[in-house]
Amino acid sequence: MSQDPLADVEAMLMEARKRAEAQDDANRRFDEELAELRVVGENDTGTVKVEVDVNGALRRMFIHDRAMKQSGDKLRDEIMRGVVAAQQHIAVKVEEITVREFGAGSATAQHFTAFYADRFGKAKR
Image (cartoon, rainbow, N blue to C red; front, side, top):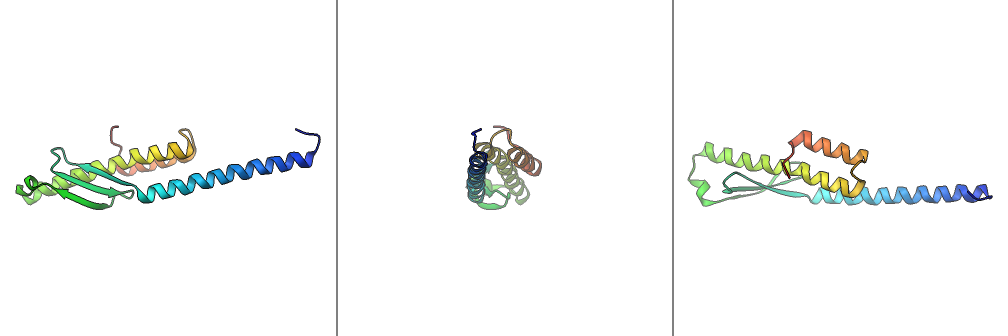
């Protein structure tokens, strides 16, 4: 503290402004990364690979010719295994992003980590 109370208030306001700007930057980077996030998952045999976005929506699918020789029901099950695997990886990736942008112990990181883990489950790292 200085002997000038006005200077002290101005310094506190400047520091608060810097923190707010840093938070805005982190929020912007977080939003951009989530918008671009794509995760690939595959079935146990690797004959089906799928790509999903942050909402878990299927964006791309790769089916090996070997998988096409299965029954429709079996192929459907293999595709769903790939989708579930990819969705579980979303929770891991979101946790990595939030920890990097907001800090491991932050309320924001804890909120988003819990939200995506509850929504999709969480893959083992």
